[in-house]
Length: 264
Image 1 (cartoon, rainbow, N blue to C red):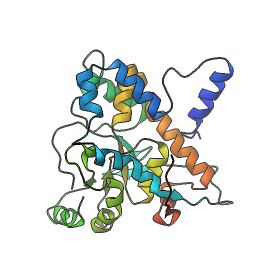
Image 2: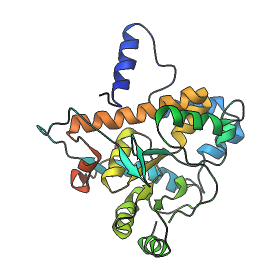
Image 3: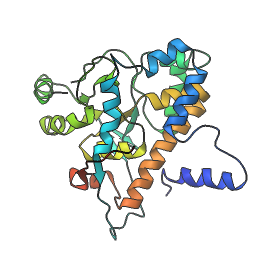
Image 4: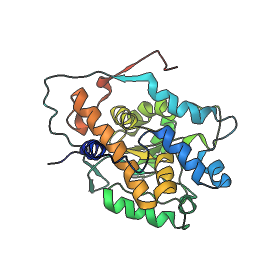
């Protein structure tokens, strides 16, 4: 049985033959190339946040405040990230978050179709953009559940709608506690596979990817989105392998600790 991390081997073996990946691996390089490829007006919409973008930046930086404790001799050779979400059996807990202008992020103006095709290839669901309420206070989550919702979406819209707020990942644990057995979907600030694992450990049932897949779409259509998703899932899977976590059930708050340092 294969693992998402096998994508690393594909890239490595191709590199031995002199073939470099068609698209960037690191988010920063992906973002820079996508900004160069997109019209300035779209760059402003996709990349921009509210006000001075403090909340948008905090969403990303806050993941560095959590560190995982590695486990040894626990048998993580075989791993699975599969989940049951609303009665659907999915190969991973990752989904593509709704983005309002995703159609325009493709050269032919049909980015939504390309994203749907990438979802079919990878098994990573696409969430269509309409209107949603992204419920960050536990009392709001409780009221929503009392009203009969099937799930809670914890997010601050990537820092796009309001500035000066808290990072969404720091609000997630309280939302999960308030939700009880109701699934909690999360997005905001996810840039790496490690971020995915941390969000899962803090209680998210499924984790949404936003800007990274939009940038992959801008650079390569279906192929670009598939590449980005496979990179993120590969990193998440390899992180589990190295740190000794074999399944979604192993990813709990006990594996994380708060840290007090930042990379310069």
